[in-house]
Length: 432
Image 1 (tube, rainbow, N blue to C red):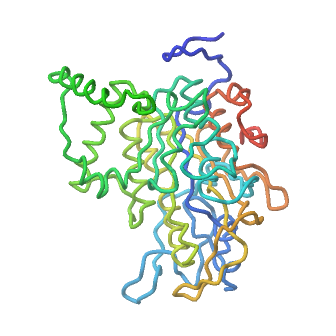
Image 2 (cartoon, rainbow, N blue to C red):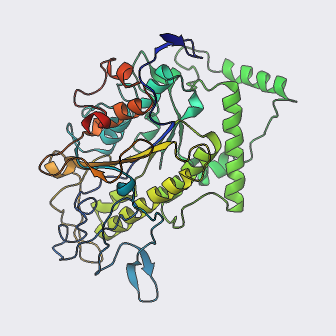
Image 3 (cartoon, rainbow, N blue to C red):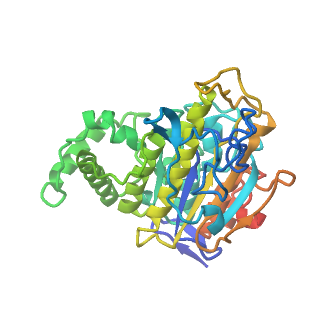
């Protein structure tokens, strides 16, 4: 029977939820299969006969035994990346979860915005330019409309405000939009130099003793945005949620100042700092859904060694994120994590060489290798040590994450019945 949600919307009960919380990691700025799930290291990238797994928090396999150039810099022996980072997880995620090693990015060019928007909307818009919201609803909108989630249940935690990332928390679809949007934060901007300079010390009005002042200020500010087309594009956080967000920002600035942000053991790039702040979001809000993206791997356009180092660090970040989730009492054992690159990279290198004389790689468009990605998921009800698909029999599509998350929260049928997903999109549970 249908029942009324707090928003006044009606929802038909479909299936029981499989998970209480979901964290979806858009794994960096384009990952080649060869250095990731294939564990080829230098063997298929630089004609060096050295193989090995540099993502051992996520994947099972021995690391390389020669030409180590992906870890921390060995300043004693002057070797770039010569000290691998210690694993965080005793058991790799592919042993406790399910790996789809050959998923396809099936439509359009392998651009970052197309990859990111496909991940959160379940649809491809290859011809859509930057500075435009996705035309199809995002997973945030589906869950807020059909699962009754409030705004602070849904967060997009971004590595930056570049590449139109702030437009990915809700769509331009006329039946959805900002009324059902998720909250967006780019923590290295909010809590980095821009935020420190502009609003770290904002006045903190107390709702118990200064509520009338708050209302007067809000009314005054809103009067300046009542002209048609200039309305404030808020995200329909309730007043209590707005106060909660403000307290989070204030608390996090305090942690920044005293050096207590929950950062990974190695945190020397923006991906890892973003992962640390994502853990702060999880600890504070306990959101039902959090999407977090990464970008540092995209340095592969001009520096293959730095690409290896950042791929290794992205794995470190994912391992840290999973470990920290298990340390949050409300989320431990109740959280599903999904990891998927936004797209792949070229098979053939470009002419640029780095300091190790290794060639760099682009993601130049519609070649097959840029369409090869993987998906890894772990959590309650997900089979461990299971591989689904192979290079000869690829299983999965980049558009699958939205129906999969909807499936995890028990609203897959109502989401798919809207007819707004790509025809290729299916829940990964159905593919299994």
